[in-house]
Amino acid sequence: MIIWPTLILVSGLVNLPSASAQTLSTSNKPSGPLCGSSTPATQCILSATCALAGDCQCPAGFYGDGDFHCNPEARARTQITGTDNTLLTLANTSADLLWPCRTRFTEVKTTRISDGNICHFQIFALNKVIGGRVSAAGVEVHFQVEGDSTIPNGIGIRKEGIVDHGVFTFAEWGRDAFELEEAVTEADPNFSPDSMYTDTDGSGSGDSPSSFSSTTFIDDGEDDSDDWGAPEQLGIGSGQVVSATLDDDNFAVVDVPDCGVDIRFRPPNVISAQQTQNPGVAVSVDERNSPEYPASETYLSESPTSNSLATQALQNGQTNTLEALNRAMMFAAKQPSTQVGEECEKTAFTYRSTCSSPSDRLQALASCSFFLSEKPLVGCMDTETDGTGHRSLNAFRLCLLSICGQNSKFCLLLKSRVEDRGCMAYTTPAFQSMPCTA
Image (cartoon, rainbow, N blue to C red; front, side, top):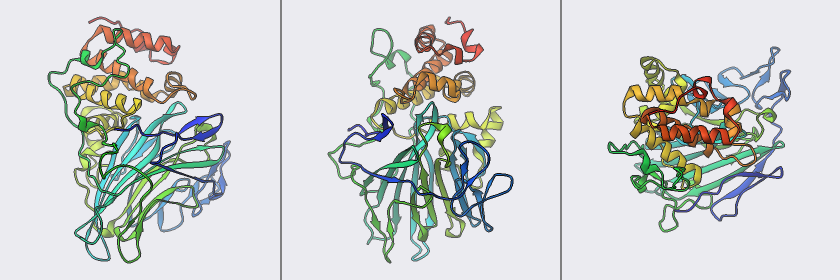
């Protein structure tokens, strides 16, 4: 495996470690009008107008958010947007997305208008902790046309980005192949929390549990034909080319009109208070292309008709936000072999294995999710200068082990780490008073 390069901020500039597997591009289009009385003012997209109330409004025949994207009325949409990283599913259910990891967003099959073949998309949201908050920092698209032997195997497109001083910087990778990823759902009934750690202090820094399958991490090695490398484009006939482009609203866009699917990503600002254009990932699907959503219950976006996320949340007596966090870990995506990626994998594995009953999971989410939801705490645990999100995620995992495993060692270790970072004041009163006893 190789380590994914990641966007970092150094002395006010966005840099990316040198790697032949990516290409950088920038955008700073003026987009639409500024709107509202906030500082900075909200910037509408080009097709929207600023209403007297200070809101960006979509034009007639379109719906959505005029400061993000306006969708034709014939399209269903799902998105993750804003500084709260708000998920809106295809069933119009909303939740804040707290999971700071690569996430299964949606899968859709549509009928191609020109020849009746099937277009197959699988889309991942790449979430990270940026500036003390969880943000959608990239998108990954897997695409192929089924039933046409003249078209190559497919294509993979990965886009990540950041905004700094009004400049949108994108990094892009490509893959000359389509690879459908199954959800990672495995749990170990004989799981021992101590197997997560090799250091004498129980820190587990840098270790990889032997119980993990190699298939739970992305095969990003250089020894096969499915490598992520330089950006790719895929010709699908009749002069149509599938690729990522930058539009006038500072989106990276993968639009396949013949398949009725539009995918777009606008990166977050390092400092949320300076964000004038709403960041996020969005997918819209034309209903006239007869879309189907395979295994929709394993994706955050679900399907337009299922509304399973809200239904399950209601049955469990918890919020949509916690149900989305539960789904992200129970039906996990593979993770990159980075420090944060390994922490993501360990955390999801711990949740599935240690919190083995529905009641355990409900209690754990209610007790521990504040490590990911409370922005002052996230910003304290993972500062803008040295944080990548792994400390907040590690604290969340230690909390899961403390609650579900009833293990005083992990409780003491967790409190020690929070105190060492000087962050105890940002935690909940229940956590501060929680006794670390078996």
